[in-house]
Image (cartoon, rainbow, N blue to C red):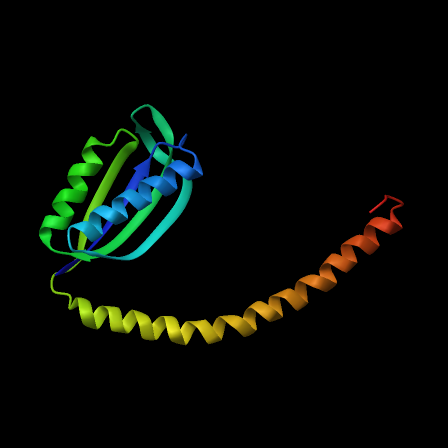
Length: 146
């Protein structure tokens, strides 16, 4: 199996629900063809360097996945016929990927990251509380109701 990365520029006028539907549809296509989605990242709206289909802004979405060459062929075929896709590019990142070993590595990384995130989240909450108290104290000093 091979590892691919596709960046898709979508119509900026699509709602969040339509983008979510788009990503679910293509995730399903990847899985239906025997591939595995590694990462799905919505980069949001960004200004493009030049006009594409008379638009200067696009909604960027990244698909990182593993699959056989048939998977990328089918995904790109669907990108071409979808009207909301302004532009896309697909790149082969790795020629030979062991899917089972890759899944095991992702699970161990996720397990290691989960305990590390909990303490930092608590620290962020405790730091945010005094700031909120300072803002309300500042508003009271100015004579404005809180």
